[in-house]
Image 1 (cartoon, rainbow, N blue to C red):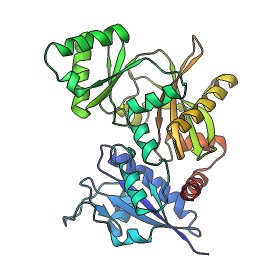
Image 2 (cartoon, rainbow, N blue to C red):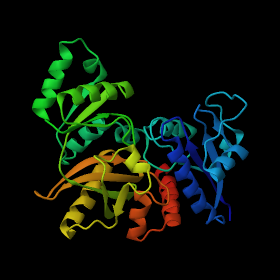
Image 3 (cartoon, helix red, strand yellow):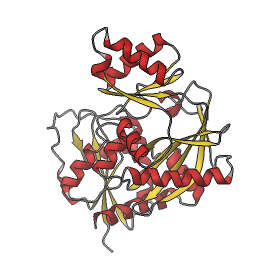
Length: 347
């Protein structure tokens, strides 16, 4: 039996470089458990964008720590082993990894790859485009406003009027977010005019597109999606934490957040969330995998969609694989199914 050569692409040029390495290590372990069927080729993208295969990529997987080559290579010059890849498994988090850019490059290679294609990846990364797609699909969500860096860093007459509009339409508390950064980077919760002005200025330093969302008192629940044209939804999980909101530190520091799987919710609410997750997946033309996040307002029984993550964290303790484990799909099975969905989508 001929083995399928899987190119595991990880690292990347984003602030989530280390998270990507952790996800890749878990996937590599799962692939090695099925060594009779799959041959693993690790391909590591350094923080400077240089692609590495062979000994260095293996070393990063083994150590779990970023590496830089002493020899300066050329940007986007691929290692020769790349030509032998049968299917790619990209696990690059954040900008240049889950925003459609690497997906476009892999599409040009004409080799199947795991996950959503260019359009859906771009929409899943851009919070403004994502929310507009959700609105078009009839999914309820919190009130929001889209603003630009040009409006924020404008003359002294325009900026105060923008803040006035946010206060009238959204009120306090509200959340200010860069449109195109993942993992809660650059997000601020604001409760006053002074905090709003500071948060807008900070978000504009990260991205030229910014989104401001109304705050809501709700439980935060998540559902995993797996498949292509006929996706399945997992059981629903809930995140609880003591911090002010689910920021980067809370998300990636052990012990600061608790995952409840399955979430203690009425069956009818769980069913609605699962169906809305599938609708959201279709709204961005998702493929392979995604995690969809919701707010459940217990007082009114409202379910509001928050966002979709088309390339969620994939460590053994990440929410996405844990949700599927609770649904009856083990980590190695999940990795294999994703590879099969990638091959199916290429047909």
